[in-house]
Image (cartoon, rainbow, N blue to C red; front, side, top):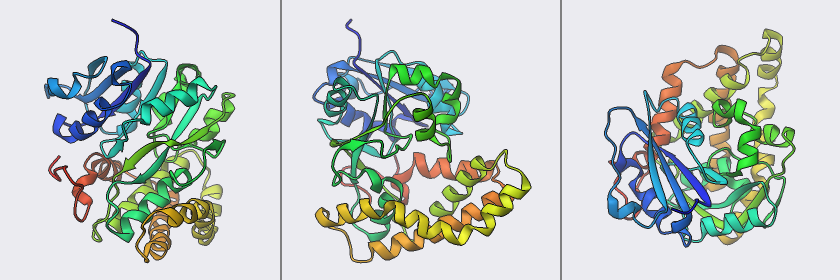
Amino acid sequence: MSEPRMSVVLVTDRYETIRAVVQRVARQTIAGSIELVLVAPRGEGLVPDPSDVAPLLSHRLVEVDDVMPLWIARAAGVRATTGPVVTVGETHALPEPTWAERVLEAMDAGRAVVVPGFTNANPDSATSWSNLMADYGRWSRARPSGGDGGAPSYNTSFTRPVIDALEDRLDELWAPGFDAPGAIHAAGYGIWHESRAVLHHINVSKRAAWPQERYEHGRLQAAHRAAHWSLARRALYIAASPLIVPVTLRRVLPGFRAARAVEDMPRLTGACLVAGSVFKTVGEVLGFAFGAGTTHARRVDEMEIHKLRYTRRGVAGLSPDA
């Protein structure tokens, strides 16, 4: 059997949760060069549908005691990969058929870390769009390709030398609040945004779940960032918390403007973006002050794994029970 050109890691609780993503990975124009690594709870007997994975070069299962926290499970999956390019996907991120091909083209051009171009998989509400813009707007498919604009840990592709350079930090790399771009740059590598490698991202859109999702993410991210801070530094960040919202909005504004110019966004998206930043800031303040416990972490992971359950109308062709 030939060697894979790319390894894709997906963490899940059961196969139905991840099936739609597996099917889209298998529809890639270079599916025959992709190794799929599934990470699931030990003893669940997860077996992918043979017809779903048939187009792929290979697939394997990594069993862990618990898929939560997700970042530890993702690191376990990465350590089982064999391809020269590694991508950690999500249960709610659906790649277009040319996604992998475009990523590898960028790698062949000398890029070490490649971020795809994001768009909305459930574009039916302002809350959905505001969540996408807050988390991934800097890497919207509407923005031109370019270098060193930062990177999210999820859905970003890394060459093997980068993974090897970050080996001692893999258990942190996909953790909330971890400074992935800082670690990548410290290892001597740049980051490239390839807008032609398009990924459709599912976002929380139920009004009842939206504030909680923003709050919980903010609290968990702040708790991880401040885990080893002094009381004085925590107090300083709490005192400066009124600045978090304008600083956050300034960071995402270029992506929001670019996406709004070409995407069909609801009129209230900007207002929801501001409100979501406030919800997240409240979480950050409490995270800096009191940290975050296992309950907060599991809530975040539950919403990450089963994001489709927290959408207003779901996504065409996908079951909210997945």
